[in-house]
Image (cartoon, rainbow, N blue to C red; front, top):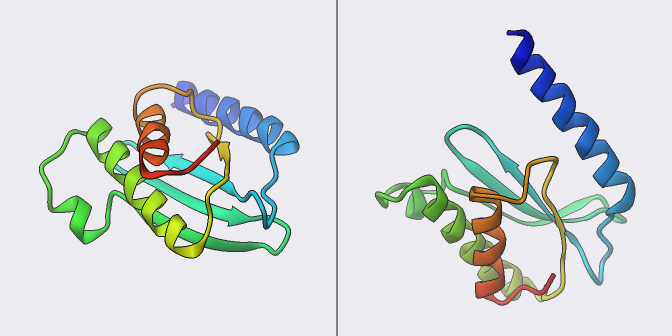
Length: 120
């Protein structure tokens, strides 16, 4: 149990340090990622207004019905998020990895978003 608590504390410190440097504006909102053991979630946030512009996750019906690996799910979530963002007129974002390493599912989500047309 102590090992898990240490991991959570470490991630929260990293996340706090990242968030002190990264903020989303109306022109360039923040793409925030959260990864649980089974799912991956992403949202595009305008921090100045305190509003979530677009959100997407691997729990959505069209994505959860497909038999994909977790990394492939991350890529598909990124592509879907990018298409929803482009519909709202968002092209430029700041990537916030949320304290997770830029590796595996988080990296796949970022690459999927780039494939979908987001620039960061």
